[in-house]
Image 1 (cartoon, rainbow, N blue to C red):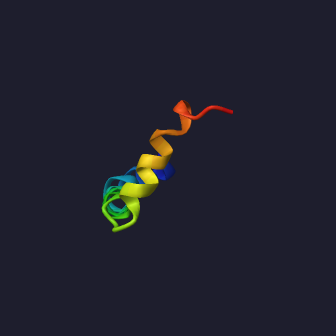
Image 2: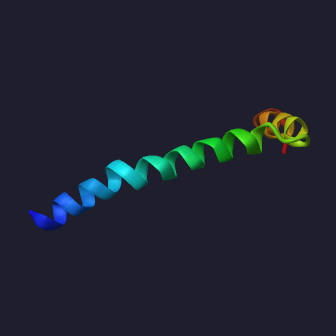
Length: 50
């Protein structure tokens, strides 16, 4: 049970911080200046003919 308690404590503290940092990074990545053009191109992929 000691290992489980240590892993649970780590996930509750640093795991939350890590997930928050990843979330903020993804949001900032999507709000960068060139993201709109890249997102529009990706959205049109299913509609392009082969």
